[in-house]
Image (tube, rainbow, N blue to C red):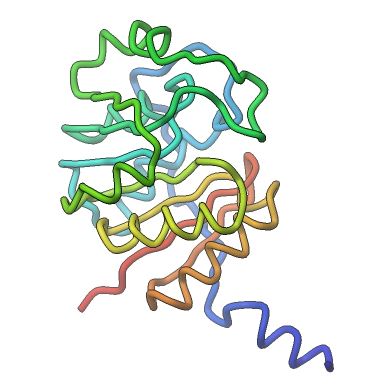
Length: 199
């Protein structure tokens, strides 16, 4: 296989680097360690650049709540879905639903749901302005959860596109399957941004 053929088959021609116009720190944030730290500065920029409404956000992969609190600054309602038991890629494998619930109790617009994403997507047919996928970092589950998210939101973001090649590959394949526009922000472990094309 020649280099040109390899490039054509393995990359999306119109993948674009995401270039923030403004960096803004949200008013409310959690003071905890998080691999998501730094990305909070571009959330409002993503909302503005893609003209997203600020009503509903869903997050798959809450862990300790850092990104959920970031989203709560911008959306009227944030639904956080997680097993709260960790996975093969997380350091903490202990059940922590009650701990995270207590930590986020002062944010009334965040609803936490202890559920596997598979059970959730089987019964939820609602539409969201923004979806965030940050679950176990393998291809199959990122693709499955991401496909549902892309079909049920105006914009889906995926953490760890730089640190996990399987996440990046799943996001690229999702862009091919859905016809959505794909951007990538390489900082802070990478953020893939999949945006539904305007009709």
